[in-house]
Length: 412
Length: 140
Image 1 (tube, one colour):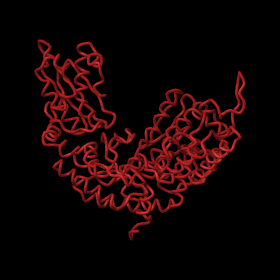
Image 2 (cartoon, helix red, strand yellow):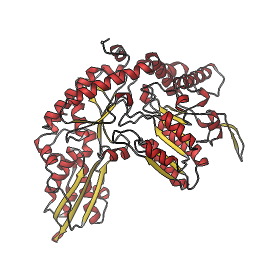
Image 3 (cartoon, chains in turn red, green):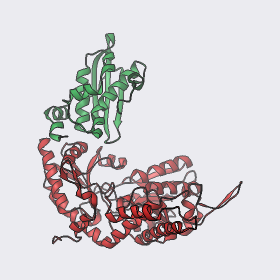
Image 4 (cartoon, one colour):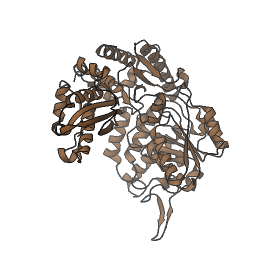
């Protein structure tokens, strides 16, 4: 373990099979963690073990396999809920954050939002926390307004307060920007929104994987996150909401599992959270998410956060020495997650990503599903490097060398 | 794929000093398209002269070196040609024009965006969809 390391990165890296492979003959330097993370052997093994030993449907049959599968699935729900300071009863498994916001749009929005109502979100949101509200506003004749940003990439709380005076029905905000890394004071935002009578939704896709999150302390009505960004499988995520709120809501999708009784002219609904889990659920991936939660809890989320702060500080300093490098987002690493969006002289992010790919370095280039934020930054695209538990100072050095190579090719 | 091979002098020169960049005061064809992957944008305008000739052509756009250089070089090739010439332009011609760089599948779309815009505009002017005429999706 290096002196300045809070996590034993060499040991963590050995848990991730994919990090042993090479790309174009070079060591894989994976820096696209805001997009999706790699999976530790424990998660891969959990999937293989489930399908090899316990596979069957849940909540239905009474034979041994079905009971094991149900236990594994519900165990994953309990672990995941505990990990974010919630209760199993209040955690609905969904495909991911996008399905969670869409679930709220239909199951809560259709019932509660009326013509002329105001919905509020911010311009730093991922499209998954904008487009469902646009669709809801359009179908209901409601209005969608946006909280602006300050020059340092933090939310303009003045414009937020102004919008609260218009008594919004919903305030939907990200816990952490997937582009700027800005960590929003969601506890304060939710408290203010609540006092203005609004229902609140927090997008936790970029916070739960990277820092300790206690949804009770956040105080939001809805909190959503994705499994694949936190070392878990794709296709599984969670929507957390208070039991009473879930009970008041209409179902999202109709079908098997979500019902209590079905008659020809009507049906009654299963108890929560099952009311929102129609059809055969994604059992194996939920079990995989449970394994990812165990892995992260084993490392300790405070350590994960501290690890990323140190990498971020090192990266901002190291990359800042490269001519042409310009980063977006708050300067203070305590107020941002381990993500760096940047431009590099006049080199388009896609061209830069192509050069870096040749060096085995994976970064994201593009609009990061945040086009309103791109327009605010007055760019069409940025390059983005984002960290997770297996990233090291060596990875930052590799990125710096990659930028220097790109600088030579593009004659910066 | 070698990035030094892709980003040779030719492409960098057209990226930094695009020829035929700008808008026409008078034009008969105006077409625009984007590449959602990276947000590349190309808009082309064409003034059609006597005998269905491309009398003048300009483009504006934002995006990566490959998309912008490709569009610029294509306008140079197209200028003075008959509109019918546009029908014959194929992917391979674009790759050749760019010096046959070894582009990966995700970057091929950048290279072909200019061609897509040119074909969309000219075929629309001629009253047809280019997919119908080509029998294939040029972006495939």
